[in-house]
Image 1: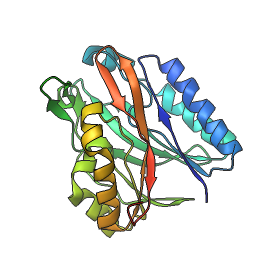
Image 2: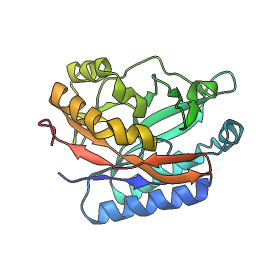
Image 3: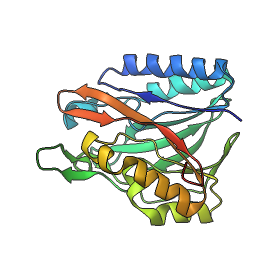
Image 4: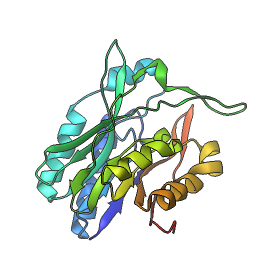
Length: 226
């Protein structure tokens, strides 16, 4: 069973990001992939919180649903939705090959960090945290445990997903360059080895704007940590 893992550089242009995703969906399906995995915030990465709140648009997800159905492929993707109290929700969706949304997880562990000589990111200022860890989602490549980026640093969550029947842990991400260089591969391998699950980590890469850049290095890791 073939799975595709995407590495993209989302910007504040929903149209451009959507075009990139659809092209990759079509390419993956043409090569025989039954599922494609996209990173966190595939719909957009904005310069400011105010800009981000104005960019939330369900049309992006609807477009990917149409592309999934047209290409008979499952999709895992991180997007933004309207949250509560004027904030957004950072969600991980699974879309079936018929275009139906069959899985949804709202990011629980929000990324608040202030790194000396590095980025200052306060996700909680504009994003509503989730409160539930859903059961794994059945897909053609296996039962997926859904997580998002910073959740990777919380092994208890991966253990719970494994106990619920996950065969694959998924971490759509937008790691900063500094934390990515230090911890990205180590954490992914640890989650795979300790749970004996496959780990699939789609990743944002490159400069999104003048304030934000991502580490990249999308990968699939087997239960041996390889």
